[in-house]
Image 1 (tube, one colour):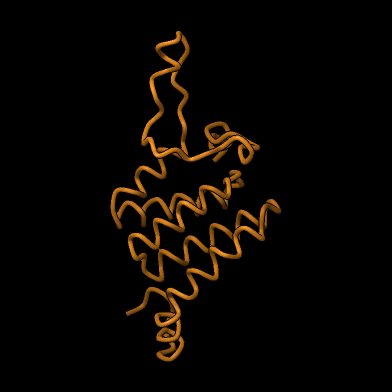
Image 2 (spheres, one colour; image 1 turned 180 degrees about the vertical axis):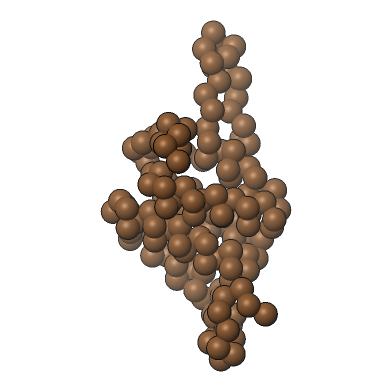
Length: 142
């Protein structure tokens, strides 16, 4: 877990922007520099592939949030969009919610920006939530 803080840079919120490009360009390498590794781009790339990739990436996101890695709001917003795009199930949406809560618990960050994320997913998942409550089942039980 200690290595995570070395892989994921601190205080990235101001400068971090998700580009549409899946991997870093080779411009730095062509100019004699090295191509920087962007761990968030790699995680988002896996999440974007399909529903299984999204599920796997949401598990990673939760581990990273619990570990104290600073996660930019733009990453949460991208995961939210992917959850909607892939029609994420209640279990996966709960992982996203837990990740946001862990991240905001450990570091007070842009809470107002994240309120829309919760309301959007709550509205989308309301029928499944009500079904779980009516049946008295936990999330993930059949």
